[in-house]
Length: 393
Length: 92
Image (cartoon, one colour):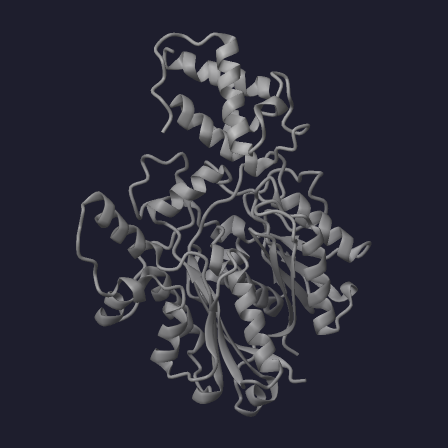
């Protein structure tokens, strides 16, 4: 089987437009959680989010054709594809999204029901469809390989990256652009999250006693995956390697994680990469900061790794929970952590909840030479997806 | 739609009956399954049922239950006390 190199990275997030700024924030434990400014939220119970301020991308035609989540994906893909050189007919594009073009959907439906508008913009369907980012990337860069979009809530982009990884490893394609995006801050979506009573009124404190809940974020992450030998042959920069992918379903509850599925997905990723648990030195946790997720995830990690516990952090404490973009943004963070030998911290940390056991990297980044890392995504609906990443060597 | 709330103060029994009716309807259980002192755990009510019950109570009584208060609710008496307090705050 082929090895799969990561030869491009792109990110749009509250803590950085672009990989350099994103990494600088992660390395310094800098949080992007601020009062929400994009829309009027005066009627909401929560006030804070991890927004991408002053985002703009694309030419006039693209900005008319695509909703915010697709434009964010385009921006991240452009950065990831900076080094170009991919074979058009042998490159796949796989994206993930949880919410699709909800900004335009929200606006259109408000006009329909609130203002009795009788005519819709003819671009409504292409703007709101979840696969708009994948289509944008194929058209802008001319990629003609297998291309599609995965929707599995907060696991969407880990599922997308995993599928792309398997296609490159198995020789279906020679390269892939993969990741995900979501633009979370429309009033309808925020109202829906408010009703779930899981959003924090101030900030996000994963694994802490009395943690107040999650903070919603938005953004995009994109990775270029490539057959290792091809990347070497063309002299591409190799940022890291993806070497395993594991999936599972809890088959338990629509919102409560069981832990059984998390254990199974982490073990499946290790088995897929033929890597022993002891070799893993870092886990970028799903770590939402909710009452339900964190103890279940930490206890699942204990079960998989036994006496030799890897370091754990939740970068959601800085870039927020970006839903369908979470896996991709966190995969970029994990590749960078391995590359720099520096594990990003869990920001906003107070005291560790005894229900969340483990070696939590808190407050400040930790220097550590780690070869293998996991990046966890555990979605509502019990759909789990875990990536196994390796430092480039 | 729930009927407009009567301006006449509810007796404790009426309040308990209405709350149990709301919880029973939300959890698809017969009202006989509930007692005024039933705990949610004993009734097999999980967190997702919990937020649906809160939503239904807010609709029924036209109140807004803060998240912090919601976290303290573990049993029917907690609900009754909380709803009573919120109704009192709006002068019912």
